[in-house]
Amino acid sequence: MKKLQMVDLQTQYEFIREQVDSSVLEIFKKGTFINGPSVKEFQSQLEDYLNVKHVIPCANGTDALQIALMSLDLKPGDEIITSNFTFAATVEVIALLKLKPVLVDIEEDTFNINCDEIIKAITTKTKAIIPVHLFGQVANMDKVMEIAKSNNLFVIEDNAQAIGAVYNSNKKSGTIGHLGTTSFFPSKNLGCFGDGGAIFTENDDLAHTIRGIVNHGMYKRYHHDVVGVNSRLDSVQAAVLKAKLPLLDQYNERRKKASILYTSNFRDNKNLITPIVKGNSQSHVFHQYTLRVLNGKRDELSKFLNDHKIPHGIYYPIPLHKQKAYIDREHKNWFKKLLNNTKDYNDEDFKVSIMMSKQVISLPMHSELDEEQINFISQKVNQFFKDLDS
Ligand SMILES: *Cc1c(COP(=O)(O)O)cnc(C)c1O
Image 1 (cartoon, rainbow, N blue to C red):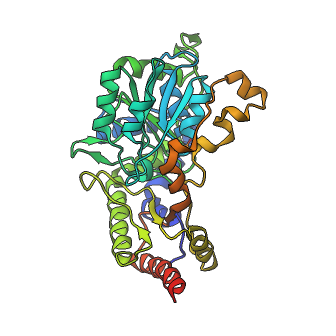
Image 2 (image 1 turned 90 degrees about the vertical axis):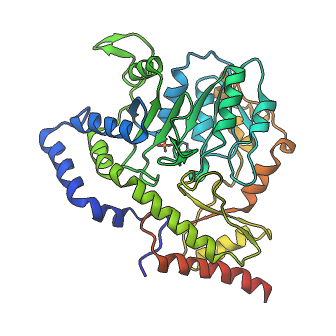
Image 3 (image 1 turned 180 degrees about the horizontal axis):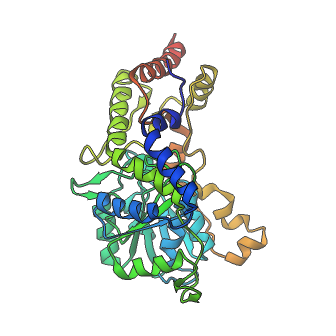
C-alpha cells in the first residue's frame, strides 16, 4: 500500500512533472519571476473556468479576503457577519481592518453558516456577510443572497475550500456573491507549490479598485491613488496552477469517488454520521471528508488512528467565539484595545459549533487516494468502534 497522507502532493506532481518542470525552468532562465506571462495566462484561464468576468490573483487566500474587504470602502466598527466554525483567516482579516467580526452559529448537517442566525445578527451597522464553503460544500447561497439583497449587504464568499464546486447546477462557487476569494495553498483542491490566492468578481468597479489595492494602490507607476498592499501571485506559482487547472474537475471527481467509498464503508457504523451532499452532486468538492463521532470518543479515535499511523485532522477543535483574540473579556493587550472591535459571546448561541468541535474528525482526502488505502482506513475506523463494543 502507498504511504497514507492527508494530501499526496508527490504523486500528483508525477503526472504533471514535464509541463511544470519546463514552464518553471523557462521562468528561471528568463528571470520573469514577477508578473511574467504565466500570471496573465492563468488569470484568464481561471476566468474562463469559473465563467466570471474578473479574476485578480494575489499572494494567498488570507490576503484575498483582506483585499476584498478593503475594496468595499467600509469604516471602523462596521459589522461583518461570518461563521464561527472556519479557519481563523476569515475572521482575522475583519479584525485587522478595524471592522467588527460578528460570529454566528452553523447548520448541523453541512457545517455551513446558518441563515436564520445571520438574520438575527443583522444590525444597522452590518455591511457584509462572509459565507465560508466549509470542507468543500457550498453554503446556502440562495438564502444568503436573498438576505443580503433585502438588507443591502455585500457578500464575500470564502471559497478557499470549494474551488470547482457548482451551485444550483449552473454557477461556480465563488462567483455568486459580489466578491469571491480563494487560496492556492498546496493542500487546497487547486494548490500551487507555495502560497497563492485570488479574488473573483463580476463588478468592474470593484475589480478596478482591487487591481489597485494589490499593487500598492498604483494604476500608473508611482502614482498611489488608494492605500494598497503588496500581494502578488508569482510567475512560478502561476505556471504550476496553469498545469493543474485543466485537471481540477478530474481531481474533484476523484475526491467525490473517495467520499462515496468511505461513506459506503461506514454505512453500518451507528457511531458515525457521514457527510451529506445537499443540493446537486457537484455542490460538494470534498476538500475534507469529515465524520461526526456520536459516542463521545472522538479523541480516543484520534489516538487510535495515531497508533495505527493513520493521518487525520480535527477541523476545528475550538470555535472562533472561544478564541481569545475575538473575545471582549480578554482585552489585555494594546493591540486588541486599539482595535476595540471584539465582542462578548455566549456559548448558548453556538450550540452547534461547540458540539461539532467535539465530534468532528477528518480522514485523509485527496485526488490520489486509492481504494486500497480508503478500505484500509475505513476498516481501522470501524475496528475502533467494534473493539469498544466487545
Ligand atoms: C486556507 C483558508 C484560508 C486562507 O488561505 P491562505 O492561502 O492559507 O492564506 C482562508 N479561509 C479558509 C476557509 C481556508 O480554508
